[in-house]
Amino acid sequence: MASSKFGIIAMCLLAGIAAGTAYTQSPEMQNHPAVVKGPMDGEDRWLDPASADNLGEGAFIRVKLDRVDVPYTNMMAVTQTIAAGGIPVHLHTYEDELIYVVKGNGFAIAGNDQPEISLETGSLIYIPIGEWHGLKNADPNERMEILLVTTPVRKGWLGDFFREATVLPGHPPLNLSEDEDAPMNNYGMVLPGE
Image (tube, rainbow, N blue to C red; front, side, top):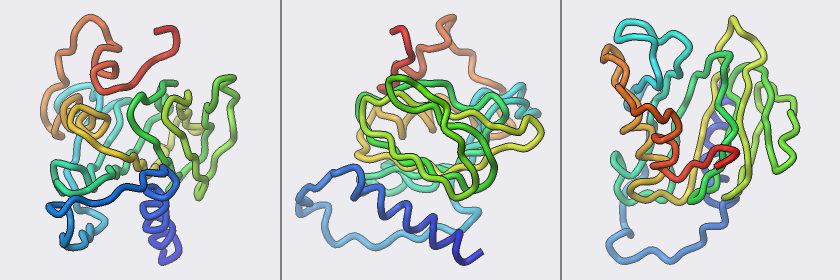
């Protein structure tokens, strides 16, 4: 248990380093306290639930840290529990991303050739801006749990997707436009063929 907590903390710290976002903090960004979140802390969200009462094949998301919660941060961290459908192949036009597999087995789809790469608990994927990537859960009966970290963060980017294109548990699904891809496009995510 302690080693998995250390791994998650290490992944969060590595996100800023791996993303290469060296910058000088402005005076208003300095002297802010550290933020500690417990296992159940964060805002719970449902992505594409079957109904207000049933998550179905949707994803359970817990926003652990973002610019809404901590305005002076330069990263976003969420935990996500994904069903067999996984995360569709896409790329980000604004952020680098780290995905750490907390629990489960599956496949990463990564790079321009999009080969499937086997993943298991403890695997880490680094995705630079503009690289194709996605996830598939290998077990249709067991959800895969991941920690997702992106940097940098700005208004209208991926961090806002997790709050604005999702619903609080118990709320009915969003009535999105006919174009299923529109929500992704609005937050700097591009699907193949676009």
